[in-house]
Image 1 (tube, one colour):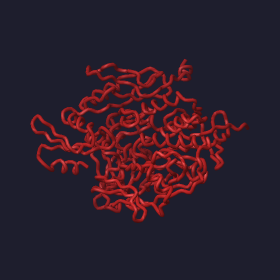
Image 2 (cartoon, one colour):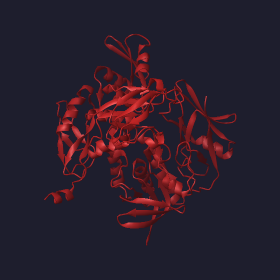
Image 3 (cartoon, chains in turn red, green):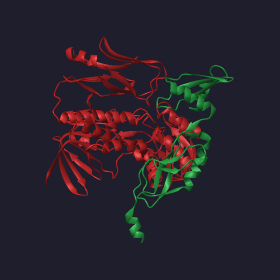
Image 4 (cartoon, chains in turn orange, yellow):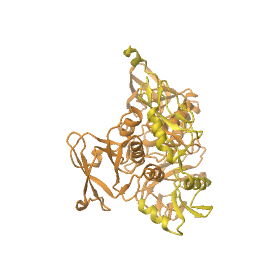
Length: 422
Length: 141
């Protein structure tokens, strides 16, 4: 078997992977983009609703067009694209094993960008009691059935979860002639973006029930109905107020999990809160020469952030492949206190290279509907401060640390760096 | 949600309306005060918010997206969008239109499938590719 050599191998051709391939190719290295699907774009082609690209392309685009714009960019560059190619394994020495119609191939990469994205949480992870009939789908599956395969999976829908895809599918189902009888959210607040609430639920008169969940799914071959009950702040259902709602389809929109089977097999250290690899500001994971980008690292709210992160990872993966950077320098780690749930990047590498400052994404675990101050400090020294009118779990906060702070850390390394909300 | 937004709306004078800005994902809560002919907008973080509030009060518009049937393609449907935001009240008309239209594969993005169907200068355009399915054609013969 012949070994094929590439400078950068990108796994996954969604927005993060395509952006990474584009950015890496711009650094004049050879790039291979791999995807198990038969087309480029990842999940974007089935997200036919508008709302993508406000920042990157300065226009309101539907998902497929956003992917199309990236594909056009990709086509201008000498990037090798292999579709219908499944990555079986990546070794810590950066040997990628690929299975495709051509057979089994091994590729030696100088650096790797992981951009596998995420998948949806399913009924199994929610542990909803009841029978196991047909008709319980995740929102993305329903989206695929309606938007790509062209058929309706049911007539009367109950949607659990107020995630973005769930709300968007409520509108889509209504427009395609289905009936959405309930949208339920177990938490006391909206988990998706507000604009989706307005234009998907409010516009169509679909009511959202907060602090309510499905406590049982009923049906023999097909879903016949669900039992719904209000929940308290600990998510314990109050069965005295339960009601029974006849329906034939249950749609779950209850969050996403980064897809890290490959990373785990390779020994990449994962962050238990984000579910993705621990990365530094160059998106390098704990494995030397392996970078990660987009939703595989953490679940982003916006595709623009995913693309930007992909471009960043692609650029530095190319720098790594050209041995322009020394990566062994000791790093600093961020820590954070509740109500902060996650901070990405988790580590900071200090080294001699041109710095543009860095972007840190913070997410809170509960609703803070009052003025908050997000602070980065080391004991008494405050390095960064941001005033916010509110903090919501649905909306990630981006903080830009400038070049000066990194310079300061190089000469005076802080004892510990902690993010806090005060 | 319904309750919280209406209670926010009742704060201040009776003519104040609270709406969420849809122009970007930030989703500012706008306070719109109508004083006769004049409309005062507050709570917006950028200029887009003001323009949005004026439009939303007078005639709300939404970008319309849906899908059409494709004949002879590798997949049965292709996604489409309106070339500009359409009036919110027009959405049912556009849905009906999409139900009646059918396009022939191959389809490429940004191809016009219905030119100015309702006389308001807004077209229906495709947003994705569909390749022609040559296998299915051969089998059919």
